[in-house]
Length: 102
Figure 1 (cartoon, one colour):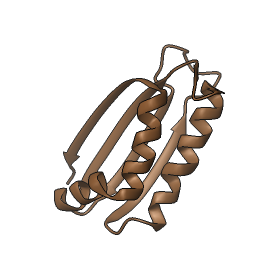
Figure 2 (tube, one colour; figure 1 turned 90 degrees about the vertical axis):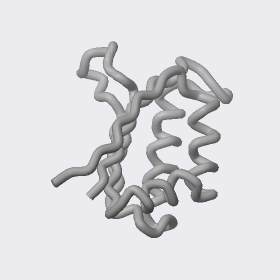
Figure 3 (cartoon, one colour; figure 1 turned 60 degrees about the vertical axis):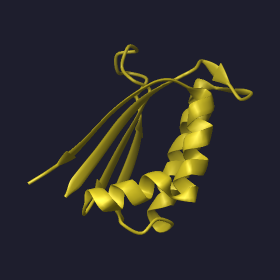
Figure 4 (tube, one colour; figure 1 turned 120 degrees about the horizontal axis):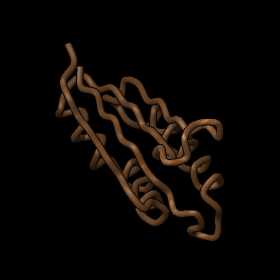
């Protein structure tokens, strides 16, 4: 199993929306991918809690795939590319780790 974990920091304001609005949009759009992309076995998106340290990343993405081929197919899938294009407009930082579990 391949695990794909991504953290994003978001601009305070971008695309006419504040950080919280953009975080919700990204969460909703990423979660829709579960029914649209074959090979994406699990997806979970979390927004940093208001009670959590404010220097944490603002958004976390966790995905599971059977193989790196499935992960690579996800990366270039048009639906993922659409969401990624929006994220690119509103993010200020990104960190990612892809690893094979088990």
